[in-house]
Image 1 (cartoon, rainbow over the protein chains, first blue to last red):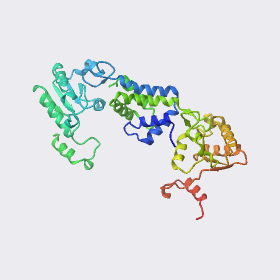
Image 2: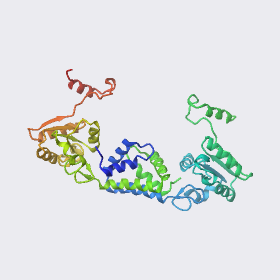
Image 3: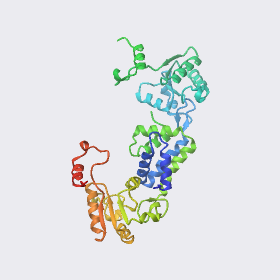
Image 4: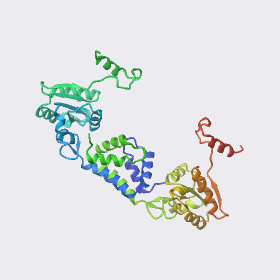
Length: 197
Length: 197
């Protein structure tokens, strides 16, 4: 049986969400159909309004305004530390840990010549300018471990002025993780990163 | 950290979808943000257009038009059988089995006096009229087993004219199911519904 076209269209749109297949998209559509008109409109406009979201001019993270909340906050630069992340979700993960009180810079990806992502796409020169202008003392590269991630870290370390301390976030056994189930690369990193007690 | 308001709003809207929590809603929103403007607009309007979907005047299922595709199809009434279901998703499940070629009637729920759902809310008189007008010989109640579902079946059986054969869909062991893991109610039904070979 063919679904009504309106429903079919909603299904094919929802299907493009990550982790949503044909069946879940249909389930979502049928459940939305049970909502009040007001709620359906709110969901639709909530999604459409995402078009209005801006990139913070200073750190490239997402913002309602020219600057994001963190760049507007004067208390966030006291530590003279800047954390460089790949994406907004990585930034949020670090913020949620509550362990970092410096500023951020969002690259929006990692160097990947095959996909045409070079230093310009990541805004590396903007990063360098922000580091120098902000008198940043330490840059923490919180970039996920991968071949491209490692290359990106090396590249940023190269182009930043020598006087600036560049650290990479520590690798090792995750809390709650079990040695038994960890891959050997993580274990070898954890052995290298051992700390005297 | 507070999310940008636009993002926060999208998250709180998406969170209302079934099976989507705070974290998944954020993941969905961030992934939508990586889409083309065109695709974001399509998703938003796809959802908003669900407001335009109609109830088929004949069978109460969803339709683009006054009548749904199945009620428009002259071949679908030949068997003089009508299947009564609770919801559009149940209708689709039966259609997908390819085993039923009659017409449908969607109740939109089951009798539930505590929630104020009586025969009027389910359109039982409309169902009776459709059965009589369409010279339906057999009504198959494909209503899920539950106290309310059972009551709804009894009620419909009472109000339909005596001449009409009223069946309820068969209960038993699902194909691919294992006796070991089935609840005792299902097993007792399966024993009652045994068939001689």
